[in-house]
Structure formats: C-alpha cells, structure tokens
Length: 342
Image 1 (cartoon, one colour):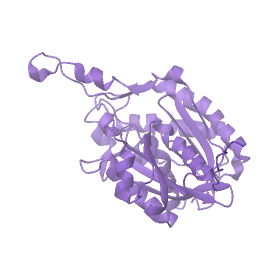
Image 2 (cartoon, helix red, strand yellow; image 1 turned 180 degrees about the horizontal axis):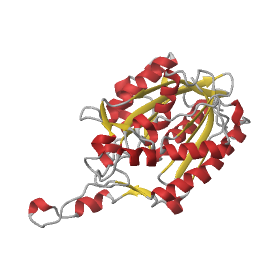
Image 3 (cartoon, helix red, strand yellow; image 1 turned 180 degrees about the vertical axis):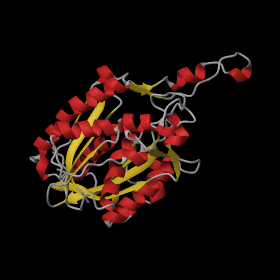
Image 4 (cartoon, one colour; image 1 turned 45 degrees about the horizontal axis):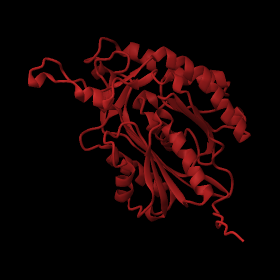
C-alpha cells in the first residue's frame, strides 16, 4: 500500500484581530505643493479631494513605519509577536531588490523564524495579502499572520509632474489575521488586467535610468530618478465602472447586502472616485465611507488599513461591523472583500 501525506488541519474560519497604522510626522499641505507646480489649492481639492498628505523623513523608512504600525496591530489583537506565523508585506516602494523587507520587519518585531515575504500588487496589495493570510490560517500553515501595507511614494514622486505631484503620500498600515469561530473574511474577489499595464507605471526601469550618462561626468545628460506616472482619466473610468462591479461581486460572494454594511473602506485613490463608487453601489446614507485621502493622500497598499484604523479610532465604524474593502491600482490589479472589523 502506498504512503499518504498526513492532512493539515487549520482553523475553520479567519478574521482580522487587530489593526494599526503609522503616519509620518511631516505634513505636506497643498500650499507647499504649489511651490512645485502651477496649480491652486482649489484645483487640487476639486480634482482629488486632497488637502494634505504625509511624507516620510530620513528616519521613517519602509521598515520603521511597518514596525510601528505592526506593533499597534499586534497589541490590539492581544497576542505576542512570537505567535505570528507569517509576515506578508505589500509594497512597491521598498527600493532594495533583495532581501525582502518583510524579513527585517519580522526580526525587529521578534516574530522568531516566521516565514516573511514581500508582494508587489500596488494599491490592491493589502487585499492580496489578506487573501493569502486567510488561506494560511485556514490551511493550517500559520496560527496568526501579519499583513502590512507600506509605502514611501514620496521617493517615486516627480514634483514637477502637474498630474501626479499632489497625489501620493507615505505611511504604513497593518492587520493581524487569525482563527475565528465564525466567518470574518469573505471570499476575496481579485484579479488583474495586464492589457492596461501602462496606465499606471514607473516612468522607466532602474537599469534604463542608471545606464544613462549623467551631467556630472561631462556628457551633458542628466540622470532622472524613475517616478510614477498615471493616465488619470483612464484610471478614473476603470475604477468607477469596473471596480464597482467587483465590489458588488464581493458583496454577493459574502452573502451581504449594502444596507447590512457598517462601513465602506475603498482604496484612497481619489475623492471623486470614492463618491462615484458610492453612487454606483447605491450605498445607503447610513453607511459611513472612508475619506482618509483628504488628510493622508494616496498611500497605495497602506491606504485601506490606515483608513480602517482611523474610522475605528474616530468611532465612525465599530468593532464587529461588516466592512466592504476594495483596492485597485497599477497592473492593473484589484481585490475586494467583506470583512468583520476588529
């Protein structure tokens, strides 16, 4: 008789046990942005809904911001770092190719030998990480998984680009996913559309940028640091029309109707996109909507957990409420799910 592999037993369900965030100390109001581009405070607010954003200082590295956010999430979850069985970091702005920044974060937090890895899924990164963590907990490979979304997008912002200079911010958000007696994370509806990969992208590859001669050695051509670029109108149409459908699919997969939600926490990309999605989804006025972008800017993978933490802190949403989350961005990638708030 041939041997068989011993089955792995995990938790029946999972949920978010704790959430935490870190916002850099430096505030960049629109008035400062106007030193870089020909615009106005009214134009920026009307176009994006942003009044200010946070930019990280020299000591506020991707790792440091992540450790601060994760510490708060672990404390809220009521567990010790040693109980973390996996660390997933979603980021597009950790500038070192290898090793994964997750390994440094896990070591600094005291997570022992927990597996740690990075994922690159832009503004959908937190949703991607949540799906992976849910599978790890229910699949039996980890008791608790730490999911971090962190960005220093100021490093990739071209302050002379009038279409993007005012959009991006820095910060970190973290969540602890662990076992639950009842379903706490609905089916994650996720996917990608690589045919639109150039709609949001880096201006040039690193090897291309640094293969160019620079002005210092007398060749006369200046090396430009790669930055983020975006076709705003294309992204707007895609986010409003296609992502509203994805959000509806997430509600349907969870067996939840819009009027049963305690919060809607979309990726903080643009206030006009958020408002348009609310209308498309026909959300009741009683459902509070995260609009953290006004004070934080677009922080990509960090935006959903940062907005979630702020809603809970301000009492706009309560522990145990059902929240619809959706992230979407460069790739183009997306991920949506209904979750129970910690």
